[in-house]
Length: 392
Image (cartoon, helix red, strand yellow):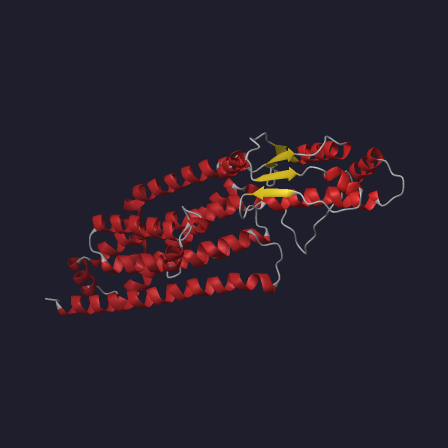
């Protein structure tokens, strides 16, 4: 195992550079993970719609109670009641909904008619549906009680308020519900794209460059070790190096987020990371096969690590990326890796129907690895043949 031992002696020389990437990765991860945990105390927080209520009718008990009901469930804003004032309020988003009560509304309502309320809204605002629901609940409930003979306005309003105050408790159940929020884990494993690619490319390339030196190759040809034995021990060294990186980052992941220690979701994250590491290993092997200069390798490591991270949703969420960028990203293994992380992080049911997209993405990553490895082996074979032809 001479070559295998030499592999790690050479790797030891590159260790300071590799540690820089590890420290930067850990600092960024701890910083953003801590911020997430501080702001993640409440996943859902109800927000009130900003709206305006313009009343051209009398201040009846019905409408006074209606205004109070809106104040409890929305944020009423005073605006100028002119047409220009309402248009400005909507344009500048001072409000998203303006409700106008026409003159004679209360009288028409108690006479059994269906008076129409006028509304002006910001187009395509989801908040509009919330206000519509509140208005319909209030007056539809009032229509039910107004058919009662001799009911007074005050009594009708009391019954409306009483019904609207009823709270319904809703419990959501699934076969296996998530016990924790997996956002920190998604973030952590996504960021490993940059860290793993940079470390493997720098570490493996520096070693492969040393072995690829023409004088070293000639000495190897004259050594008692066969070329197959030399290459096999190099590959074993690459696999050991990658395995140590996986163990290191998985262990750091549990330190950063100890609450998810070996649950089903974490095991899927780890499986996805191992498969991506195989692909990253093939990328690093290809880079090492193509380059003979350490300075060039450093630049390639940064370009590949940062480039794949930006287009695949590591540094910028996929939701913010353009369609053209996403189309390009689909031709990279990092896209399928980060997509898998999102699926795993939001997984609630561990049935085949829910797990099959994850396995499909794993196979796509392995397909990339096979293609890259094939290209690398062809390049290495031609390089060896050329070096053999130049033997003195």
